[in-house]
Image 1 (cartoon, rainbow, N blue to C red):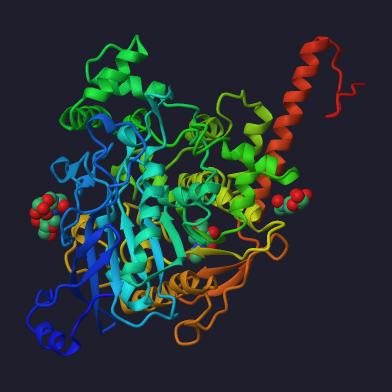
Image 2 (cartoon, rainbow, N blue to C red; image 1 turned 90 degrees about the vertical axis):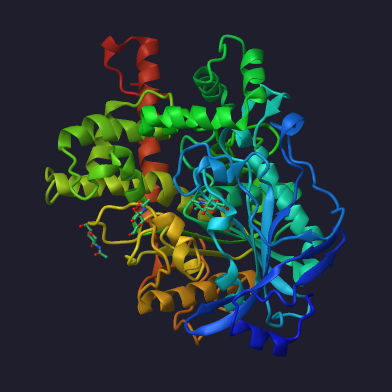
Length: 601
Ligand SMILES: *[C@@H]1O[C@H](CO)[C@@H](O)[C@H](O)[C@H]1NC(C)=O
Ligand SMILES: *[C@@H]1O[C@H](CO)[C@@H](O)[C@H](O)[C@H]1NC(C)=O
Ligand SMILES: *[C@@H]1O[C@H](CO)[C@@H](O)[C@H](O)[C@H]1NC(C)=O
Ligand SMILES: *[C@@H]1O[C@H](CO)[C@@H](O)[C@H](O)[C@H]1NC(C)=O
């Protein structure tokens, strides 16, 4: 633990938020690490938090180490000064907040925020390890400042960078580049925490991983990787379940070729594609991305998408198959998942963000015609969920019926609302419920579910003004005590949210850090912040908490939608496919009717 003299601090604080006179310093097995103390304010209370920024946890993944699993950084030669964020990883999609000059291939750093209060347990502070989102293509740990969460919640917060896009996930189906490096980076950072966090006053037996969007998918992937046994005991998944449709491919050879092509390399031969990508400088990679995005941003994000694959090592089996298998038989990944406590949730209108794919400029006036819905959006959704399978007409009709407001079926404004619901259900809501069900069924370990719905003063990501619940990402502000980089994200300096949001934030930080400390979001901080007891989730009661201006308890969140997608629609799909097989076998003239078990009359 850092040595400090509170008296001196109080004096210095009056003049300088950075208390440089007494530098916090810890001695780890890797050497001494010095940080800085920062003063943060939340709800008029001030806190001092020690932070250690930009600690390298892996050797730079450059040169021969590009497209390889990360290697531990090892010991420091001299005392390591951890007072500046490390550079962010190369972004595989352009975002103004992380311009190319602020990124680097040498980016495997972590940041640690340590509160000054006594820990809640003699064994040390609980640890919250954050995995940022950004579609596995974008983002950085430094956007999410752990200072307030750490201070108010009295936990250690760790944020990390991990490799993204091409450099993080290239999988060409051979040992030259086998993919999922970004997931191995996350894991190596967790191992670093496991080995060294004790020196910072942390209790390595109380690590909770949490993440949003792709960070949340990462949380669920880490929770299904049995070799992580020692590394954490619980996970928080915010808006991103493992079963994101269309996410997992066997490799990303096609996307690799697309990258090589825009770098003017020969794409006929995979060895040449590999050498091209392996020797490309970061400048060339960045230029390829920016040229591609400039030409056509929305379709390009799909072409540039190099994300986790079924590499046979980190992900052995497509999670969809795992989930199906787990209902009937034992499987190692799900067994491991069921030994970690889970807090899982989605926001009110997750689908709003995906409306951006329809053209980001006219979201407020967006209208969708019946024609567009039926001939473009519904088939698109089915293609996403069912991939290459030919979708029978009856399945399409069922889907149209389900996502129609029958009081007003042809109003372009109700249709846009239904489209948003469709996007939300497929990509977030149904996968989240499926994951909570799998986790809690036949399991002794606690599972919690939330739905975060309030419309906040500011959305983190662009959203149409007509949505009446929270968008994707909106819970991040309250979870971090509004200490995320609003200037970078929204071009607002010194953002102060309305008072009710600060109260909401106080409750959410209590739920989140309670869960990290005790495994129960209601303990130890309860009545003072929330009057509601958040019940456990199980497949029978299906209880959850609805987080709003006033929190409340609900049941059966997205139960109808989950049944529709997982049971009704699939059953119709399978039955129709079966009838088609039989009729093509026996000739369709006979007009036979066949049962699902194959008997035909
Ligand atoms: C990029 O880095 C420079 C130097 O650290 C900093 O001044 C600048 O604000 C950064 N830009 C962004 C958009 O973060
Ligand atoms: C729970 O598990 C049982 C037994 O494995 C299975 O029959 C049932 O379908 C599962 N329920 C849900 C909701 O997944
Ligand atoms: C939001 O809008 C939808 C569709 O118009 C409506 O059904 C729902 O009740 C509204 N919810 C809230 C919280 O206002
Ligand atoms: C940020 O806001 C300032 C002042 O409101 C404005 O001048 C500037 O153009 C904005 N920057 C961006 C990138 O929108």
